[in-house]
Amino acid sequence: MALPGWAQSAYPSRAITFVVPAAAGGTTDLSGRMVAQALTPVIGQSVVVENKGGGNGNLAAAQVRRAPADGYTLLMQYSGFHVISPLLAKSPSWQQSDFVPVANLVSAPQII
Image (tube, rainbow, N blue to C red; front, side, top):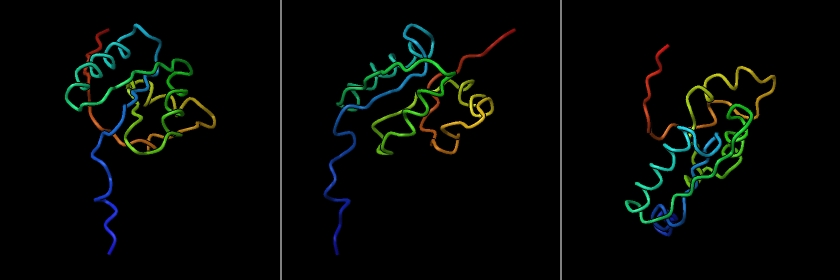
């Protein structure tokens, strides 16, 4: 009996990409960079932050959806984008069910 799971290297064996759906300098970008900086020494691999702003988060979400589901491309999604964007587009290129939540990294209360 073949055991292909044993032949795989430990995760992660290469750099991980955090795709951030905002321009550099915002809260979501800063949060992604802080997590990447803290995570790199723990996992022993680089965590690269890639900013993909525009389209109310749709461009970044579509990019991550098209990436292989191997855990090396992660979406640092702002909840507002992730909840409302699929409802605003007539034919969205992604659905919430295309993603699996991994961690809640930041909680920021909003006060009006």
